Image 1 (cartoon, rainbow, N blue to C red):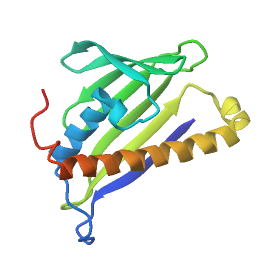
Image 2: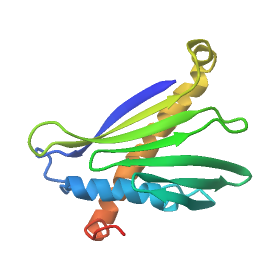
Image 3: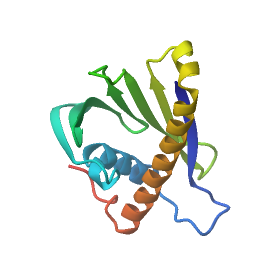
Image 4: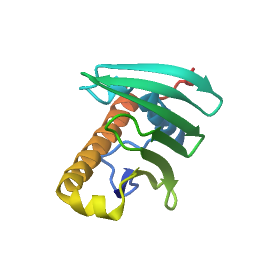
Length: 160
């Protein structure tokens, strides 16, 4: 399954939403990777593993389900989550890309991909439709949390 969608961050024609800087969005997306419990309430635990100049590994626990992934940071535009096949979980990825479309127009593109082939996608269409909807709602919630954190000033300081 491949799925992508775009969420607008800044709309100069809408005075009701606060404008976020590209750096605030970047810091917020990094915070989502490093502290996912702020964004995913049903996550029981997340441990950060080995760090490099370009990212880190994580182990997340949702009840009995444990997922290990790698976060790749491509400053200042892209964060990629890579999940290797493990147990009953197939290989998958999520890429979040900050985009600018014209002056003061800031977006985040969310791209999901798993290792299923076209036949598996056809067999799982109803399930995949549900997943697409859940992914989109989660991503909308992520941007809402970024706005809340920005309002609190938590995206203004340099991340350590």
